Image (cartoon, rainbow, N blue to C red; front, side, top):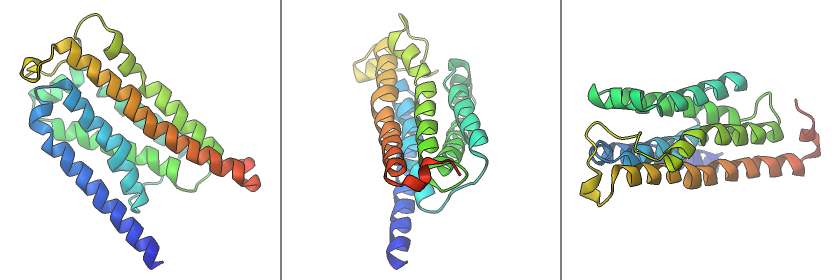
Amino acid sequence: MPHLNRMRGAALVGALFVIGLTGFLGRAASQLFAFHMAQHLLLITLAAPLAVLGGLAIRIRPVWAVSLFVSVFLLWHVPATFQWAARHNAEIVELASIFGAANLFWSAALTEGPLSPGARALMVMAAAIITDLPGVVMLFASRAICVMPQENAARFGLTPLQDQQIAGLLMWVPANLVFFSIATFLFARWISNPKSLVMS
């Protein structure tokens, strides 16, 4: 038990550190969309799962957890919505809602509940595929459509389109590494435990 408590404590410290890092990126994120996207991904792929492993899990039905996460994710990746948040100094609302929805999602994926590990692995993979869609648009669009209101890509030696393409790559590569690694772990647990082959 002391060992478990230490692990949970370390996970919570890690979650707080990542949340602090997203705040540190705030100024740069107002000028470069790729940094803004990095804030989202840090909260979704690191802060939220670490918070769940640290004991800050919120339990709701998995179908609602996935639906809310995907809906909130897609909402804040529509240019009009994240640009609205930037213009009205509402980035904290944007980031807090993303973290909250991600916490619900990872709570359903990483904690024991009504779904077997195999079903949770499929849930994680499905969410990864759906949330890839904005990244596809960002990467293959012929013009910059995802730009911050105070966009200043030139300061970083980039064009707005290159900035957008980097953001799309971030959504595809690092984010999918986390999602599919967790899905693989859950799938391995499912295979290694014959009793879990039947959904509870």
